[in-house]
View: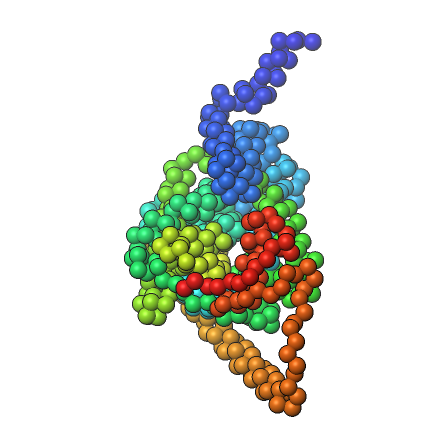
Length: 406
Length: 127
């Protein structure tokens, strides 16, 4: 037995050796990035439930994938390139993925098929009380206005000349401040950008308490921020049961491409409200949501292989994502101000910024800023209306972009 | 604008959009979101109005029933029974029952003390 040769083979087969050949240094950079993301998730509590999984998925893929020759890799981007290539014999062949893929390839099937984001929406529906929105349907206007960032970022990305229409649409949806919607749309339109878009979406959602307050102060006056809003009317149980059925029928008929997201969101909510499916509602809110979050986080993280992540496009996506978030906040605030004027000062414009989805963090920011201006101000329930309207609004925006580019 | 053509062009991953097309898609998309949510808002107002009318009718019927009962047999004034473990009644000044219950639950939670070991004499909204 040639011990030296064996040691050499072991060394050359190890990941440590791979760092020094064929651009393996990029994996080292990605490992550092994944550690930073882990730090942000664990220490800074940036959307930890998803970001920790995404960061660890990123770590795993960059420890095991150094190019197509990495047979032991957990995730193989080239398998998915073939999956999407109409000229490949493996076009849309899940069988090929199952027989040749690693663990994360198999988990990623749930993302690719749009299963995880839809199931997350089901959990969100089961956890959401739409009462404030039903009590004050005007909130829907704020939810619509706060999609401004989606379309401005789309325009910016498309006009930059760097991105295709599909890619621009996926980047724009970051402004919807809704992680599952961003993942759903990106997987359908430009799966090659899934890693940076998901990371940007979840990072900015976590940064909402830092991004929104300066814009809120900039666009509203002290007098406007001090406005105390009247208490909403009490919504009956029957109204809450009818609401998800009406929304599902109405929105899906308007934009059929929203069916997976809106359908699951409203089914989850119906289970919550109907009063006879408590077990299902509980399972969807807790067990199922947690299981799907595990799979979603780690498989989205797996798409951040060094070669596809470390490029100028990722930097542009991060920049455009921030623009999208900022303009969505601005859109909500401007319509909030308009409502303030039209109602003779009865609406506090701060609730407009909650029109970006990010439930319930954006509503909490409105509450905090409102209380800073007037300590006896309780805007939380008023802000929850636009907040949940934003979820429906971003799903409609995604449905529109999917209808145009899908 | 021909969206079908645009979609076909965009399906080719190498195709970039021109600025005019991008602007039209962005404006049209934003308008569609508004259109969808405004229509939904109208539907919610209509159903909300129907429920409000129904609730108002039910409340009026109940009120007239109570009035009729009061006319026929004036009920003796009896204090409502207190809940087990309760230390009596709390006076509410401009605070609905539900909010009072929430406030008491929050106070008990913050004090880490069971609710039946606390006594609330009155709750008043400071305006």
